[in-house]
Structures are given as structure tokens and as C-alpha cells.
Image (cartoon, rainbow, N blue to C red; front, side, top):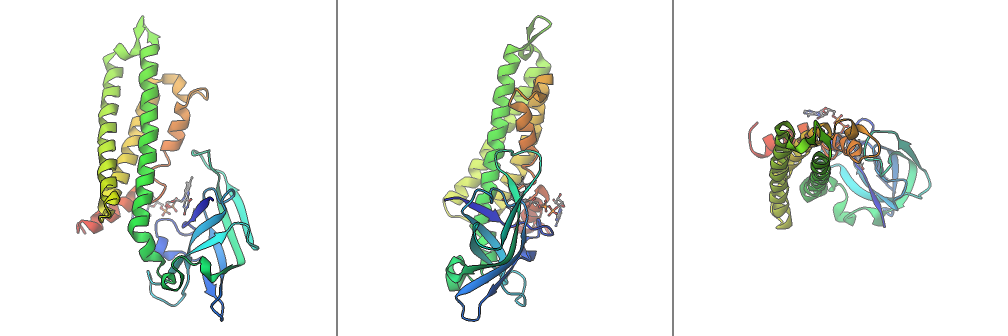
Length: 268
Ligand SMILES: Cc1cc2nc3c(=O)[nH]c(=O)nc-3n(C[C@H](O)[C@H](O)[C@H](O)COP(=O)(O)OP(=O)(O)OC[C@H]3O[C@@H](n4cnc5c(N)ncnc54)[C@H](O)[C@@H]3O)c2cc1C
């Protein structure tokens, strides 16, 4: 069974508590009607359900007015349209519009106790895990790019010897290996806290910030090592470049990570 994640909206990116997709409970309490639009809802077109953050109480204060609902993608009133974008071509991302989509109340995550409790569900371990996932993806892409650049540098000969023998090239690769090792430590350190059920909002934000930004540097340096072939379709490098550029944006931008670190560490 596949799930898409419906958080972002056309006018809501980092400011997730401001989502406007509306959930209205029926008078008998047995069903909920959904209206609104989710944007960048990756894989909604192939998923069974959208795990969707909705505004469930128009009058309640911020942070106490949201719920999570599971919306079947084949429900009546749903339109799913693909959005064109660079990178991460293995999954479509979509605009999903809900027009009077009726779901049973059982599809509210947490049932009665979960109604209007969406924000605490999201802001704790859920976002920590999402940050770790994206950090791990960035580490994986950077590692693959480095592996390819290293192999290429040993194979490609110019001026009578492999380019890996030029210090300008092997120092770039040595720096990239060092940065990659630092990234791996950051990820594993933050993941250790999550694995052990310890609070880790600051650690996961630091890992996502550091690893995704550093992974961009690593991949772009590796692309240069491969010269023109770093841009050719026949090599994976050009895909790594397209994919890595999205990592500091997805799942909370680098600035949102900085804001969270500053807040959690009482820097503000
Ligand atoms: C390919 C792709 C797949 C995606 N998949 C999903 C998905 O499956 N589900 C989902 O819900 N979303 C998904 N997203 C959305 C993604 O998580 C958002 O793009 C991301 O959270 C950033 O939101 P935004 O682009 O609207 O940026 P905005 O929040 O509009 O920010 C724009 C710029 O302003 C900066 N900024 C905003 N607020 C502040 C602030 N307070 N302080 C400092 N700087 C600030 C940001 O750092 C950024 O540089 C996807 C996006 C892409 C591109």
C-alpha cells in the first residue's frame, strides 16, 4: 500500500501551520468533508492514500486547529494533476484538488483524540524522521557521485597519465571524501537520537542543513572532475546534479532548519 504526503499547498510552504485545506465534520460526527488544494504531493497519482494535513477548526487558535486525515486517492471529488519540475524524475509530483470529498471519520488519524491534534503529531518525531530520510538521500547521492568521479579520474587519461594523478584532481576528491565522512557522522549521530526515542529536533535539523548543503558542494565538484562527461546523458552524474539541487529545499528548506536550530538552542 502506498501513501503520498499532503502537507504543502499553493500558498503554504515552510509555514505549515497555515494550511487552508478544510475538513468539516458532519453533524452526526460520522464523516468529514475535505475542500482545498495540496501542491507538490509526490506520487499521489500512484498512491492508495494521501496522508493529509488539514485545517479542522476554523476558529481554534494556531497549532490547535489541524488534523491528519487519510484520503483515498480514488474518492469522488479528487483531481490529480502532474507538476513539471527538474530532478527526482523517478516520481511524479502533483497538485491535488479536493472538492467536497467525503471520508469516514475513522480516516482521521488518532480518531476522536486526534481531531485538532495534527500539529503535535507532525512537529515531533514525524518531521524528525522526514529530515533524516532526506539527509540519507543526500548522503547517498553524494556518495554515488564521488564513487563515479573517483573511478572516472583513474580511467580518464590526459597529457599521458590518468587525471587522478594531478594534484588538482586528487585534492578535490580527497576534500570530497572528507566532507562525505563528516556528512555520514552527522546523519548517524542524529539518527541515533531518533532510534533511541530521544528528542532530536535540533540534531535532525543540523544534519539536514549540513548534509544537504555539503552534498551539493560534493556533487558539483565531482561533476567538474568528469569534465564534459559530467553533463552527458550517458553518465549518471548529470542526474545526481539535478537531484542533489533539490535536497536543501525539500522537507523544509535550509533556512527553516536554521530557524529551528536557533529556536531549539535558545539563540533567539
Ligand atoms: C520535487 C518536489 C517534491 C515535493 N514533495 C512533497 C510532498 O510529497 N509533500 C509535500 O507536502 N511537499 C512536498 N514538496 C514541497 C517541499 O517540501 C517544499 O517545497 C518545501 O517545504 C519548501 O516550501 P516552498 O517551496 O513553498 O518555499 P517557501 O516556504 O515559500 O520559501 C521560499 C524561500 O523563502 C525562504 N523562507 C520562507 N520562510 C522563511 C523564514 N521564516 N525565514 C527564513 N527564510 C524563509 C525559504 O528558505 C526559501 O528559500 C516537494 C517539493 C518538490 C520540489
